[in-house]
Structures are given as structure tokens and as C-alpha cells.
Image (cartoon, rainbow, N blue to C red):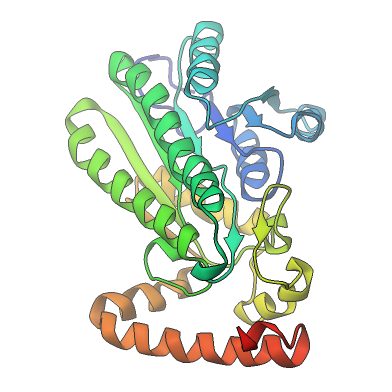
Length: 293
């Protein structure tokens, strides 16, 4: 461990906050950070579950604490960051990871659905950035890692709100990275493909607007070979250590990103065909009324 307290620690001896740390990608990142020597603060609305994960990390020899935090509440996030720095004297990593999915066609949305996904997936990230950046600015180091999605690099149908927020997170992260370089602050954005996490079943706070249960859609996700969260976390942290700007894991998902960049029109054409095929499958397998709308 480096003795100089005024530099970023990778990862031994570091202090890291992980939002959405009670399950899925957040849990896997927290566990892997702990294995690499970091102290981890798991911030989540699901406090009891976060406590369970923190206890498991501690039992394995790591250092972790759980905090119940609503990331849509800036004051709560700012308090979390302030208390962490007051106790530990530093903040090396801020993983703005918490997010939700709302699935369905645009006509099925209500304004409350838009407000909710924007509040969690975008405002939750900006709250984390704002709270952490001021601390990192003063200390002269730090790494902000925002979780977006492949849906932030290539548009997918049936999840317009999710795509909108995840595109925003990619743009936000890239803009901050440009201006933070001279401040000693690193900024990365994670763009996962399909990872085997609770979000495939909707997660605790997710929502399916179409009359299709999330668990009925899980077989469709299997086509994309979901990656284990543990493997995902190892690959992501390796890329974070190298200060990669945009981190796509699994790597083969980059094909979709490159295709969309090469020819947006072709991507839209292919996505539309995939959307039509999915509608037919929903009609045959789940709910005949879906395709009649």
C-alpha cells in the first residue's frame, strides 16, 4: 500500500462507495473491490440486503459497511459522501451503479414512469457525481465510475426510457472526463451487455409495462449469453485500474456499438426487424394481446 495519502489507490487501501451495492452488479463490484483490498461502503435502499452482503464481505476478511440511501435524494447522497470522508479521510472511488429498468413500448408509458427512470438512472448518477466530485476536487484525486449500459451506446427497442437515461450517462461521463483530467480526477463509464443479475427479472424496483412477466422474458435474455457478475466485476475493475474511458463487458458486445457508429441507419433497420420478431414471439409464447396493440 502506498504511504502517500494524496494519490489514488488502486485498489489496495482505497475507499470506495458503491450505490446499488446490495445485489447484482453492485454487489459483485463491492465483493471484488474488497478482495483487492478496498474498504467498501454499500449504499442501497435495500438496507437489510446490503447489511447481509457487508457481513459476508467482513466474514471473508474484508472491510465493508452498509448504508440505506435513496440516490434520488441529493442531500442523502451528499451526507453519505461527507460522512465517509470524515471517517476515513479520503474517497478513492465513487461507483454510481444503482439503476432500474422499465420495459415496454412508448405508448404504454405514463409520465410517472418517465419521471421514475430519469430520477433513478440519471439523477441518481448526477447526485453521486456532484457529491463525490467536490471532495475529489479538494483532495486532488479520485475515480468516478458510472454504470450505463450497452443501451447507452446503441438504441434498443422496448426500453426507450432506459436507453434515454443510459445514453445520458455516457455523455455525462465523457464530458466530465474531459474537464477533470487536469484536476487529477478519473472518470469512466461501464456499459454492460447482458449480465446474470436480478434486473433480468425486473429487480426489486423494476417495472414491466407490457402484460409480460419479467420471468417470462428471461429465456430471451439467455440468447445473449449472460455473464456471471463475478467475472464481470473482475474484468471491469481491471479496466478501471487502466483508467479506460468506456468499459464494455462482455467485450463481444462492442460489435453492436461499432455497428451503430458505422451505420446508424443499418442499426435501426436491424433493430426494427428484431423488434418485430420479438413481438411475434410474445404473441406466440406469452400474451396474444401484446401483438394486437
